[in-house]
Length: 245
Image 1 (cartoon, rainbow, N blue to C red):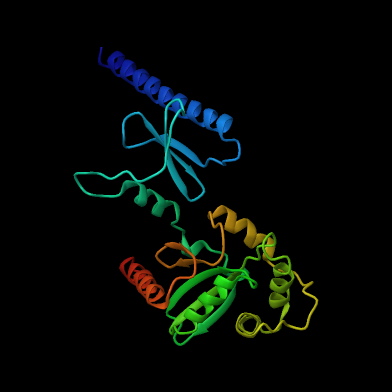
Image 2: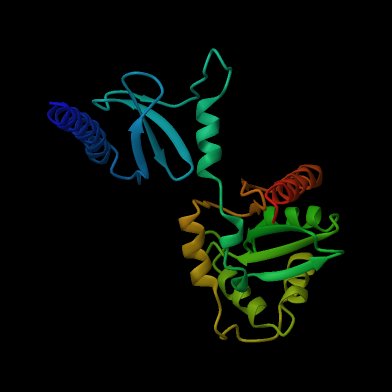
């Protein structure tokens, strides 16, 4: 008797689960039909009844079950005052820092190098130069520069990135390009990680340069000021210390 009851409950649970998947699949199909240019990463039920959460890259938005309405904005839990949408976006931008392919980056050690920061940059990006000016003011940090030329915006950036990678001293070459516009004297035809970095950026939902990844796993787009960089570097160091690593 108990066994039969358990079997029925299990079948009911599976049926409910299948129905939920079917709903999510139908929402995904309807989204693809109505918005073919949007690459949807995930669809799941939202915290609000009748709505579905849709993620597309770094974007989070909501639709009803028929995709008749699209809602852009934040869902706030009125009891806890938590911004559930912001929390979801933050989770999408989290990166396993230790898993980054550091051999594909230019390493620059400043001071003790005790704090760590990965930066995706384009040698022709004006915002990257602005960020470099802020990074120059920071000490005791190890920088991992991932070369991410955005050829659509800067047609010469790819060659410049490869020339930097092919230089005998990549760190010096990178700083010379960013601070003085001086390119290394080589053809830029050595084996390089530029294509791999472009693929990595796509996997990490990095949509532009500069993009910073801190030890805490936080991914921050844009040229942010020194004080914010310092705060996030220290957050990453504290998280690392708390994990016992």
